Length: 259
Image 1 (cartoon, rainbow, N blue to C red):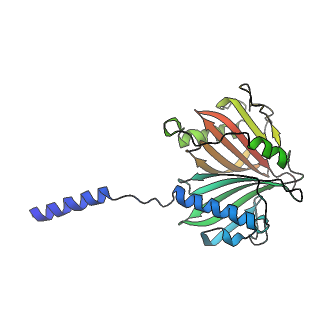
Image 2 (cartoon, rainbow, N blue to C red; image 1 turned 180 degrees about the horizontal axis):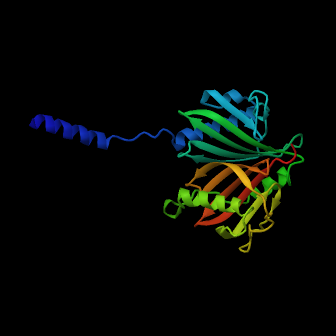
Image 3 (cartoon, helix red, strand yellow; image 1 turned 90 degrees about the vertical axis):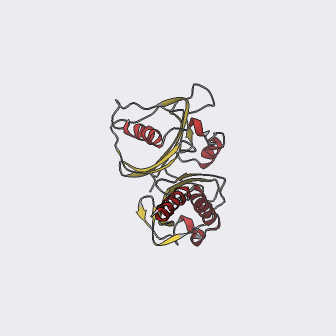
C-alpha cells in the first residue's frame, strides 16, 4: 500500500510539473499572419497555412472564392501590422497598398479551429469607399506607435473589449461612457483627427442613432488592441482600437461604402 501511495504521489507531482501546451499560442498565430502577408504579396492563396478543409472565405461580408478574390492578386504592401488573439484563436491584419494602378487598404480577420485556418474575412476598401485615401492612410499610420505594452501596464482583455464596445455603442446611445484618451487620434479612411499634439481627440464627428451590429472581435492584450468587424447599418466595417492605461489612444476605421 505504501508503494502504491508513493507511486500515486509521484505521478501527481509529475503531472503538476508537466508543461501545459496551449492549443493556440502566439507562435502559431504569428506564423499564420506571416503566411497571409506572403500570400497577399505573391497573389497565391495556397501560401496561407495551415488551411482547414472546410475553409470559409468572405470579402466585405459576402462569401467569395479565395482563388479569385483579392488574395489571388499580387500586391506591393507598403505597411503591415498584425494582432494576435490566443483566447479566440484569431488574428487581425491591416495592409496598406498605395500602388497607383489600384490602391487598397485591407483589414483581415483570420479565425482558426483545431490549429488550422477555418475562416478568413477581409474588409476591402479602395476608390469610392468612405474617405478612402491610401497614401493619406500610410502617412498617418507610419507616424503612430503601436509597440508592445509592458506587462505590468497592460489592460485586461475585458477592459480592452469594453472600451471598443463603448465606442461602438455611443453611435446609438450618447449616454454611454467611453474611456476617451487625450491625446487620441482617429484614422478614418485617409482622414486623421490628430496633429501629433497632446490635445488630439477622437470624440469628434460621431453620428447619431446608428446601430453597429454583428460584431466579431480580435483582442491582443500585449498591444492593448481590439479589432472589431461589424455591420454599420448594413455596410461592412472595421473598427480597431488601441487602449493605453485604460484610455483610447488610437482608432482605425475601414468602411466599404462603395460596393
